[in-house]
Amino acid sequence: MKKNFVSLLTTLYFTLIFPVMAFAAENGINAGLETVDSEALGSKIVGIATGFGALIGAVAVGMLVYSGFRLATATTEQAKAEAKGHFIQVIIGVAVAGLAVTLVGFICQTISGAGST
Image (cartoon, rainbow, N blue to C red; front, side, top):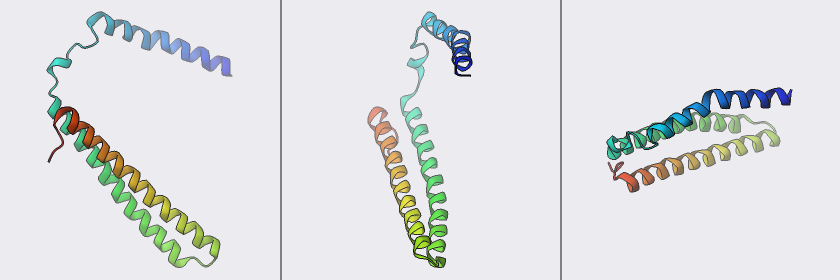
């Protein structure tokens, strides 16, 4: 089974990816990059990251409400501990997502001057 999988990946590489790489080398790897507006691209990336952060925030609010409900209705100590652990995991997830959005905004602003709203 593993041998078939490796041969499948090798076949896909040589039939799909390798010709594309050769074509890119033929036309120059930087073809068309001079016409990209870095500020517009940066602001688009910041907008996508902000939308991602808003989606994460909305899901996190729902998960916090759910965890709070589980904590309030828990009857055993084990159920309370699980609800508290879930609550902490949601808070950590929101912090990581917030840092990711902030990092993307900082990088875009540093590189192209975009993202400063």
